[in-house]
Image (cartoon, rainbow, N blue to C red; front, side):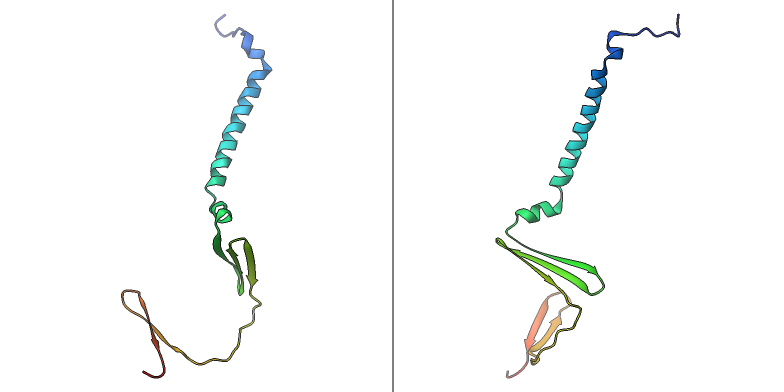
Length: 107
């Protein structure tokens, strides 16, 4: 009969569907591995020195500094710092983008 399909030996083999599932998982694992390797933070972990500035929104800013094996974390308190000091000079930006510092005081 033309519309009837005859079963072949491999049609009822449950291992064929398992092989297809394993192939799909292998493809997913390779894609995840590529994404992990392209992650910019994975290179930071291996670096000796780096600085990360994280702005949480508003005035909350966190700064993480790694120098060698030492990892230091700074977090803003939201208050403005005060101190004593004198004006040391003026900085000007030239049209080409360079900065020039001109100290004040005795010439």
